[in-house]
Length: 170
Image (cartoon, rainbow, N blue to C red; front, side, top):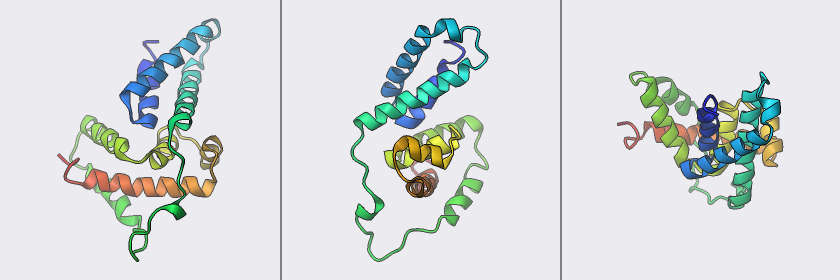
């Protein structure tokens, strides 16, 4: 448990953006691990098993408690302006952290991720931190691949804005 508790908790907190829920999920993961202790004790893939269980339990938690997903076509139009170009977001990521250390950078990203709406945060975390393929994310979240790609792109743009705002740039 000590060897994997940080990985399990981090997986859950990135997806839920809620420490309390992540703690509950981590506890459930280790209860399940205890039930399979005989198999996991000598398994070289125990870490992967725990990460998979943590991801699945977190996604189950989110699908159970989240509000209904709204399609982007249902979102209110923002005047006549079209969606912002993603290129400035990419530039921000390249230059924003040039003078910050890894620990500070990690804290800023965590804070910004917590502020993203769930429909952007979850696919973004699954893609970038859990290294899941678009198709797998779409299947797991029961949405189209196009929606996953759109949510990830818009999540990146929103994340870049949050990271570049004066509130997070301390």
